Amino acid sequence: MKISATVKALLSLAGKKQSDLAPILDMGSKQSLSNKFSHDRWSASDLVEVAKFCGCKLAFILPNGQKIIIDNTEQKETSPDE
Image (cartoon, rainbow, N blue to C red; front, side):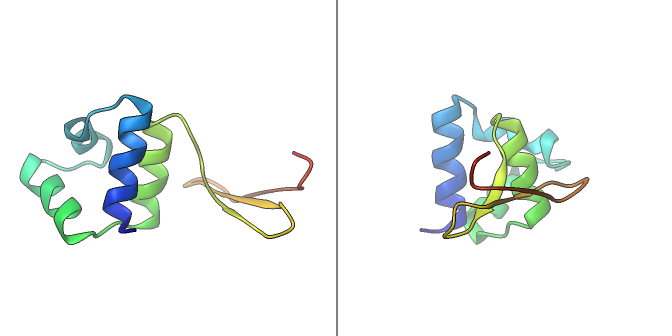
C-alpha cells in the first residue's frame, strides 16, 4: 500500500481532514499538500507529524514485540512488555 493511502486511512480513522494537514506540515498551499499525496513523497518527519496530529505514534515493531518509537525530538525504545 502506498504511504499516501495509509496516511489517508489514518486520517479517516482519527476523524481528521486531509486539508488540515497543510499547517501541521508547514505547507503554504493546498496544492503543495495535494502534490505530496499524489506523488507519495513523505519524509519520516512528515509521518511523525501526521501521527502526532492523529493522536498516535510512529514506530517500528520488531518480531519480538520490542517497539522503537520514531519521534522528532528523541528516539525511544520499549520492551515487549510495555
